[in-house]
Amino acid sequence: MDQSKEQRILNSVSYNAVKGDPESVINCIDKYCSQYEWAMNVGDEKGTILDKVVEEADPSVALELGTYCGYSAIRIARLLKPNTRLLTIEFNPEFASIAKEIIEIAGLSEKVTILEGHSEDIIPQLKKKYEVETLDFVFLDHWKERYAPDTILLEECGLLRKGSILLADNIIYPGAPEFIKYIRSNKRFECTSYPSHLEYMKVEDAMEKAVKDPGAAAMLF
Ligand SMILES: Nc1ncnc2c1ncn2CCCCCNC(=O)c1cc(-c2ccc(F)cc2)cc(O)c1O
Ligand SMILES: [Mg+2]
Image (tube, rainbow, N blue to C red; front, side):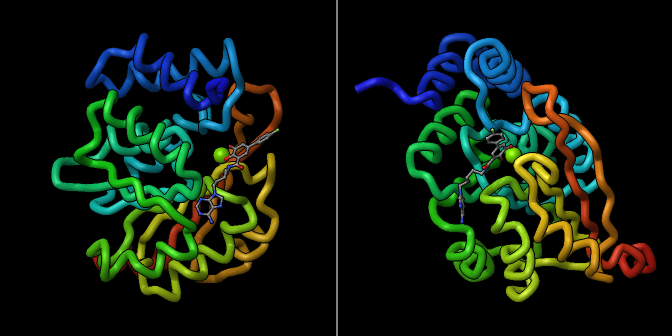
């Protein structure tokens, strides 16, 4: 049976990347996906925005929705401090298994836990089953029509605190209009748009940052 594109990405990382070096894994995936086969990794241009927001959040517990091949999980986890962790939810079992191997090659398996299943099923389990109190940072990069309902679900499950930072990919392309409508009209979130481009393409895209109750967090210190 022919290999999948995701398996070919893993082959390229396994052959070309330096084991234990997250930067070399990131560069290898970006090189492969810009030169040979486009794939829906966040990419280097939007990845730089992701890096800056992760550094701003300096999370103890981070959540990613939509692991895919693990590219953004590696970008996030490589910036995390000791004794902090990233939980990432992936619905597609093949993607989850490929991501696990690529994250292992990057040497970040200790910091990243891949949870296989639907975000709407796993989010309600985070507190009890995965010992999460609240989430400091959430990266939304799964089905675009799930961004809004899953943000509401995170709230309902008491997983967001004052100052929790959400960052959403693909606001322009493929687009997440319901999420933008919801989050920008919600007074409890302070939103910022970061114009960019679709990964590996000249197509316009953007990321949206939403900070929960920012003022309140600031008043605490
Ligand atoms: N309920 C759940 N829970 C967890 N995972 C779940 C889920 N439900 C689904 N999934 C699994 C995620 C499915 C992939 C999500 N990402 C995308 O769909 C995506 C697509 C493009 C794209 C752009 C131009 C094109 F021409 C074609 C595609 C770019 C991106 O950056 C993307 O993130
Ligand atoms: Mg995306």
